[in-house]
Image 1 (cartoon, rainbow over the protein chains, first blue to last red):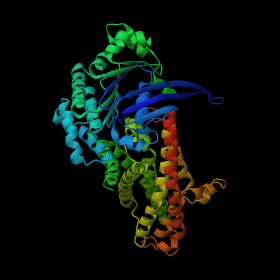
Image 2 (image 1 turned 90 degrees about the vertical axis):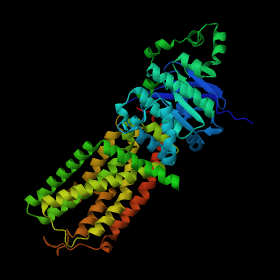
Image 3 (image 1 turned 60 degrees about the vertical axis):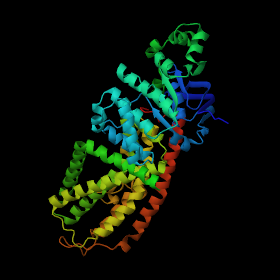
Length: 273
Length: 274
């Protein structure tokens, strides 16, 4: 039997926001309200939604960093959160945040990750360097502290870090946000090659409709914690009776990605908890 | 086994390179420890009282070592939050035991370096004579104290997980309280009567008590030029107490850390910026 790389059923997650000290009041913010979907092995699946739609919460649950309040999650056939130890060995994650030691060089950050995953640095380092070269990064930059690099170069390091462990599943949370067009194209081309060459399963969250259409075999639209539509880009446009994926998104979700910055994000809600 | 060693080494490797990159700050903090220890010890020199000088010297040395060890472990989570790497560390396939052991090994190395710096300063400025002191015994007691302080550090490390905004501050309040109740620079008998029982809860109280005996501070036979230090068998009660505290506090610290990590995964507190 072919087990899906990701199987999510009726996934629910709520954050409770407390206000007041003497008489605290709790307000519930539902980040995920019964999300179900599957991603096949070797498939690139796109999750599109505005800030606060639940994309990052979903990625965090799959990354073993959050425990859901309901539903079931299976990653490469292993249940979460019960089998988190095995899952952690098999996933690589790239987030939109600058999540690395900024004072350390690219090489030091990568060697640290190799050791953290119990890998032999002598074997892991060449793979990371190969990824970086493939992403168009010059080898002379490997010893430069990350804080002295551009956002595009920093993001390439985080991609190399995620791939250094050779994961069968890659979780990409807005990996090209904030990148210049050249860097964005480099990353997209690399992901296409990676999937074709190694059959890596990729779950990609993005705001970029063109990117989703280019990279993803199937796309899910997430809005207010619910998966409101799912299918190939052509399916979604057909269902919404629109010419573009942008219009299909607006038609099917009632949201406009361009207005997302005005909305209260999931991040802001969490920071207040 | 090889994998476990690599994973433990990862935290030492990271710590070493971060120290290298933040070397100016490391120098500043060591200089500060150097100067404050000397100024405290010089109070004894000014009083022309070698016993007081020795008491202050031992207090400054031990407190620098133990507080550094505690602080490095307690702040390890707060540092990861500031760097933005907390989620990546927690999603790596490394057990919390290995993670925190790696952090503790590096903290121990760093604390030993600070100990040497402070000791050098004290020897240069106070002209104390340590001939006759049982320095090997002091080293053994320091090692025995390490376990209890690692346990305390692990428990304090959960505070920045529980409260990203106030947790780091709370670890310093806890550290300050240990300084107050443990009689680092004075006998605990000078504390208000209602505070004195608290000193029994601090491992530093037993470390100090044992080290003063081993150096020979309380021994009437000790003179300014030749100390008569106690043997290790004379400080067995303190050693056993310290080892028992370590045996309880280290597993307790790991258990507390595990419970809070589980809670943080429910509430979303592991998030990068809180």
